Image (tube, rainbow, N blue to C red; front, side):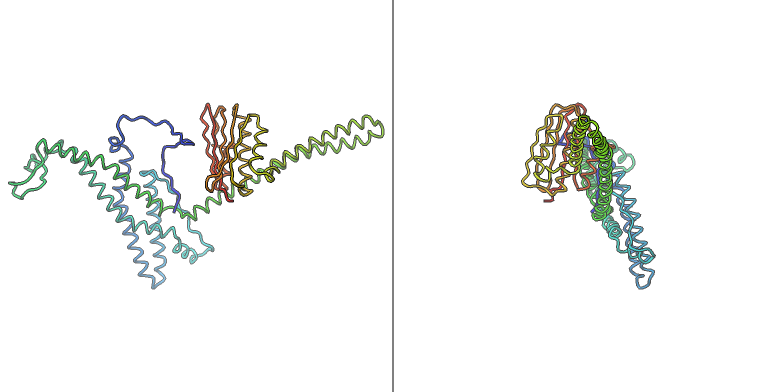
Length: 449
């Protein structure tokens, strides 16, 4: 129901793993001493007090509010109960963030269509986020009791039995018996006390097994807590999707405004200025034709060359807006035309069963076009390749070059702009460009046929 991320070791694109630190001990022996085990154990131990607090508050206040519904006072009490559940949720998200390394987005405030006390009251009572917090408080109590008991049992019995030979001496000194009594009668004449070397070995073996099993039990229960926190204490899918769409809409608006400014600048500084100069030259040529036909003809010839240059600039500008070849023939021929203009030899492979919708096709074209421009300007490569194919309902792009690498989608680079443009249509851009090369850029776009 929400978007949550767990901090993990980052990986590179295309399945390339970063170098990991080597450990001498195997994972099974190392796990009981790892910081993650102790953090998650601390989280599970805190489940009991937090579960009791949330459960008592929720049951008490909801019962009180429901009982007072015969009067108007019951509604504010119910809102107060839900507000307390939201406060418990805030503490639980902070606890999960610090101990489980689980980042859950804060749910936004409850929105109402109109101002006033009664619309606010109705909005609070009708908020799904508020009631999901209340459900969490109710469900977390029995789970908190269970996880606390299991964690304490594994910890105390495991480490207690593993270290039993070190503290067995307290029994003969303070209790007058040889060790822990497994069974026996009350008078101490018959029974089994753990005190022989074989008993010590048995305790150490049993304790070691519990200690080795404890991390995986703790991690399994902590994963249940991750699901509870991530599923009930974050914003709903609808709210998260609305937030994404608002962000994407802003990126689309900014991109469109930047494109309009670029077109205006290109027209003003390029074709428009050239056409103004051409009009002036033709005016002068018209006067010279009467006085000196040879000079006038030369000026007309020069103006004719300027017309050709202006037409080429207009064609380049139109190609930057939306190339005619893309509309007429699709991605294959249009990308081949872009590759032909690249200063680096580029092989193009397009394997598509059909054409995607024009909007996706245009984004794919301009994505590859900008990536090839980066190859020409910055890569220092001797060859490059472009591959386009369809996988399920996704359009896949892959651009490769054997250049110097070091490309990044961070900051205000052109790749960052491409990432925002793809995000606006639920696309993804992944860059793998280590220093020294090669550079691989993969993009995914929705097909939307």
